[in-house]
Image (cartoon, rainbow, N blue to C red; front, side):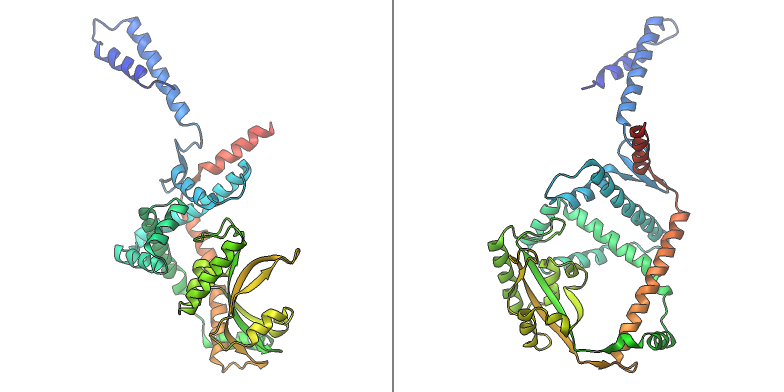
Length: 374
């Protein structure tokens, strides 16, 4: 270990003994060596991205540190089943850093616009997020992810603030008129002609080996644990808990986190390819859910997990007219989503152009690539 005390002490000693009569060549040499030692230490400390020790990027002069980046990185890789290569790690860190840079730009924009989320708004959001959990389950979630209550508060403040900015700068600029809806319907009328009965379903899925990237409580490690977990979920549904809320909290299907397990409309012919599933669904009325059903691995035909399906609604075959409020709402949402994506993409381009961004981590990756190629 390099001793910081010695060069500092040498400088102090030399400086305290300097005067017009005592400054000698020996003193000068000691001072020169001490300064060289400090410069060497500084060079060692700055080994890494050129922004300075631990600085991965700056946005308009505001730093994003390695510690901040590593917290997100560790959270995403905590459950990785196997070691990640250096290239994979750098790629993931770079992607995370891109998102952090975007968020920092938006947070700075929010400050200028006076849109930073208040403590009351943040606390209300945390209370809402904690509602499905017991305090013990909530604390366990935080511990598994390696985050603190302060981290949660900071993240919710950022999420709420960014949403305020996007609502002001993007969403408020979207206007879908009745003429827009009518025009879309006339050009896409066939989309609203159901040639067969459609079933709108939602699902909750539990497997014996959950995706390690999923941040879920009590992930099953084997079939016995999976059966115990799906039974617990079924009991909650039976006691009256909201299906979408339970799906968001426990389901391992990709659709769960986005929309509470909603699979959208599925044609009857597709459901009939699985006789057991169709038989279960055909007995349901809208709002009801099935018993626990096994999920089979398509290759081995062995049980890979379990699921519960809910029938949200059922649509008979036939043409849906523009006068149907559901048709109008579906078109409105689709057009709104398309325009929001377009305007948001343009908005991000503009704010990036206006910001001064220095990505030292990206520069460091390029430098290493250049040196490896020589």
